[in-house]
Length: 449
Image (cartoon, rainbow, N blue to C red; front, side, top):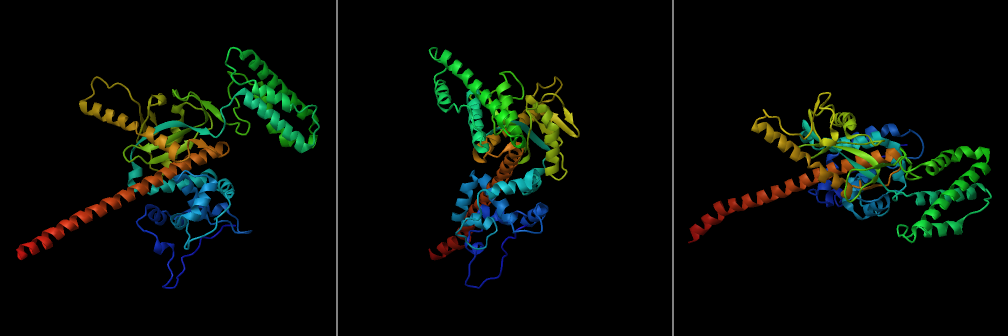
């Protein structure tokens, strides 16, 4: 059942609520009044039923999701910080300062599952709408990056050890008597992997790795034999992952790199400091002049960059209310098509012999501006929780990416408001002083002397 936000009731003339005691010039205060909360609540009504215990208010949940990404916090830390910050409480719709936690951190998991990709997409759409005409530029910049999953660097040793541990756990839960637990042996085999590249240790390390794989296969087959028929369906998917890991080889396609995140794939972007990244590829669309993110979607597979363009432009059009960009500027990784629908695709290339100086300069400026998307991707990763995605599965990749893009847009709007207010204050202060000096102080001094 949908929960209700606290109402702004009339109080005594002696009472001062959060709205009265906080600084109205604070950007977060102004953002709170700018976001159409009623529209969000109406949009999310379909995710709730009309009976049962009332859920947490939609505004509270959405505001905490935004704050979490804005300030790069986890589910637990954002709830703890909320209690200490009155501006955050006002942003989430509270009228009075609260002393207790607004919810359990696990409520975030249930809410994200409830609203899904469409709900988070609505938040991103609202963050774009805040910027008005600036977000409706006809020219956009497109690029892809990798959103890494929160997993350890995959090696065969780690995966085989993990299989053995999970087989032990299944046996313990289901009461299966194992022929041997291999606890002490596995510990010694893993220890033998230390300094495995040293010439004296190579032979022993490789033999230990083969033995570890043998033990993992032996334990999986034992679980398959001894597991009761009525329980096999429960563990079927997991055992299938175990068998695939044990049978995969170095150059196989669609390898599994993590047991709890089997959809992770390996991407090589040609970086000197990080040759391989394990996660999901993400496509980002940015307006050319204003630098607003107007598109962000996660790819289920490691597709060629050029094949991601139709979906990226389609999402951009949806988020901007049917306004499709006329020009998309990309790097050479998108080589292939020069036009997709009504959108022209521009790639860096040598100018034609008959090109005028104006045309050359225009193209040069366009591709210099294209490079502006690179630091923005860096900020998404370092400042808005895109560096390591802790959310589960393919849907988790999409949710984290769109929330990071929305947080970037909200922060950009807040900085713009702060800079405008600072400029306005300085401008007024300077001109009022000049007026005072010219028309009040100087005549008085002349009259005195």
